[in-house]
Amino acid sequence: MIGFVYFDTDVLHLIGKTNANQGLPAELRERMLLSYITFLEAFSQLTLSDNAEILSHIQAIHNWVNPKNAGLLPHPDAAIAEIGFQETQAADGFTARVINLCLDTNSPEELRAAASEVMNALGEMKHRAAQDFTHLVDVYRREPHTGDKFSEGWLNGIARRARVDPNARPLAEIVSALSAYYEFEEERIKLAARDPHYEPDQNDIIDSQQLVYLGYPALHFLTCDGGYCKRVRKSEQAARIHKVSHEELGDVHRVEALLRKVTDFGT
Image (cartoon, rainbow, N blue to C red; front, side, top):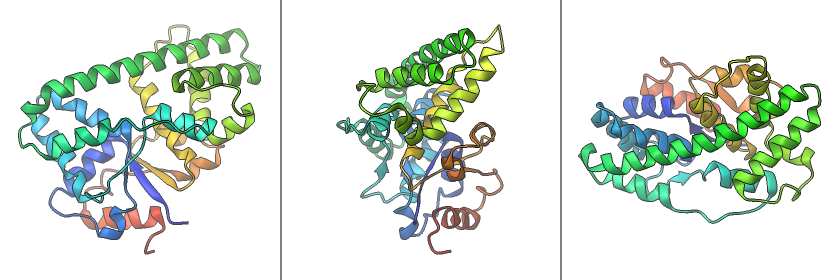
């Protein structure tokens, strides 16, 4: 099966730098998708002092996707609804509008106010996810050996976020459909439950939601963060998490070869 690829934010910056002046071949561009989380994280960074460089990385998106038909992954809650509960939700179109804003300006200062709003929205998303995660940690501390209790708590949390009926499908089917995300969260909760001074890392929490997209069978995830591979080992989706180095992403030819290998396109 020919696959599709999406990145985390670090990979977006590295490929944006490497491919600033040279695009991918057209056939590979059709295989590249843009994660909702990744783009919003990158866009929110336009509030930083090095925002001109960050904008250049974002604008390089047109060098590695089809600029006339960029594949945008949905909000992770919408993906949970579709993958886990088989419920399709309307796209908000927000990401596409913001991408166009980025591509149509040469001044990051023009986008600072919008980036600040996005940063606040991400903060709210992280806060809600942190609340759900803290609740699961509390449940696990009370009943650490009852897997069903953990699964039910996890299910209710994601159903509430996605605004779907938690009983729409059997629990086992939902866990299987989102197995990489489930396993990552379970491993994090075990570690957190053993730490009496645990405080949720909101960045870690939002990053885990990148794994939701692996519920789409053709998708592959590129990341420089080895934590994903350490925590996701049993899920069959683990084979589609690819840990890559800065060196691999530092040369246009190595980037192309890597993407061809991952997508099984032209290899």
